[in-house]
Length: 94
Image 1 (cartoon, rainbow, N blue to C red):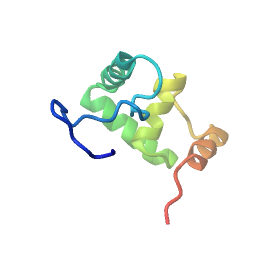
Image 2 (image 1 turned 180 degrees about the vertical axis):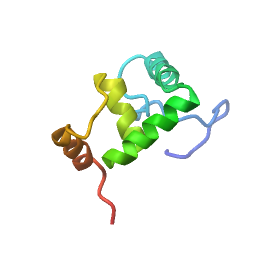
Image 3 (image 1 turned 60 degrees about the vertical axis):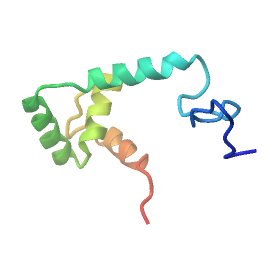
């Protein structure tokens, strides 16, 4: 039964249901998480520059940084189509 505890149960997630790390080997989730954290470690001045650039473009720091990490592109004001595409992918707020 869901929520039922058995002797020796450590209270972890049930093994029958999908996990937050998705399909595939268990270790991949932690390797990706570690790699993502390492990629986001940048000097303070770089963070400030990116934050200012993101604000000028109407993006969040995360959106701007993700574009750099995923595509290797530093967006400019002339990249209006890509900026609009990024904004469209934002979750709706009610």
